[in-house]
Length: 112
Image (cartoon, rainbow, N blue to C red):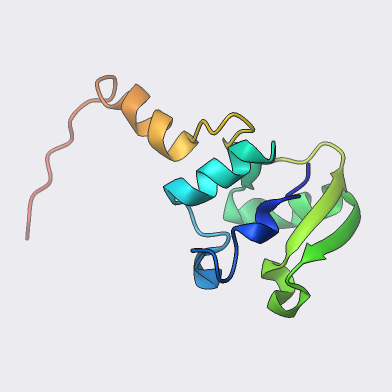
């Protein structure tokens, strides 16, 4: 998977560096992912070790000064992640809640 082309969206073009790797993407970021045929993946926090072991090679593409938030290209094998935004711009953070909204039981919330 590659984040190629996303550099143009980051710093100075509407991206908030503090929001990289934090949940759902803004519409401009999703459009950039779609435009460049990239992916945005998420993982369960406790799976971090397994995710790190799946990376076979890594290359910083842009913003090396951001450290772990820099834009990377990875070569991976059997990586336990979920594609949150695919190369067509379909975003799990939008489709997931819409898909399950009518299927899950309503749980009442009671204020204490």
